[in-house]
Amino acid sequence: MSSEQLGVKQGKLAPCPDKPNCVSSQSTSEKNGMEPISYNGTAEDALTKLKSILTNRDRTKVVEADTHYIRAEETSKLMKFVDDIEFYVDTAGEHIHFRSASRKGYSDFGVNKKRMEEIKEAFEK
Image 1 (tube, one colour):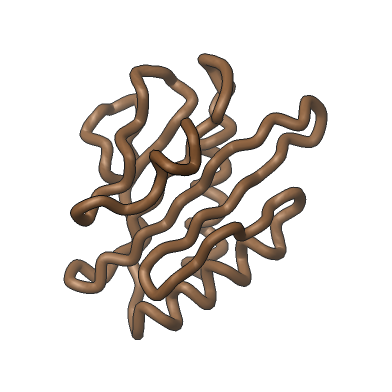
Image 2 (cartoon, one colour):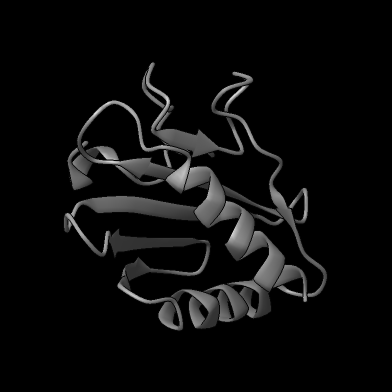
C-alpha cells in the first residue's frame, strides 16, 4: 500500500486487505482484528508515550506525527521488508486505534500481530 493511501479518513484507518499480513483495531475480521489500546490522561501524553516506545524499537522510525496520528515504518532484520504501522487517537473513546501491515507478500507469519502485542504491552506498563 502506498503512503498516499495511509492515514485517517473520517475517523478510520485504511482497512486490512484480504491477506493475513495485517492487523487493525478497526477490523471486524477475526483474522485481522485486535482490541485498541486504552489510555488515561490526555491524547498528547498518550502520543508522547507511543512515540517513545516506537523510537526505542529496533529498526523502527516515526515518519509522520501530528496531534492525533502517528505513522511509523519498521524494517525486518533479515530480508529488509518494510511494514507500515499507524496509530490514531480517538479522544472520544479514550483509545488508540492502530493498523500494522506488511507492504509486500501474503503471509507475515504473525509478525504484525506480535509487534502490536509488544507495543500494547509496553504502553500498558
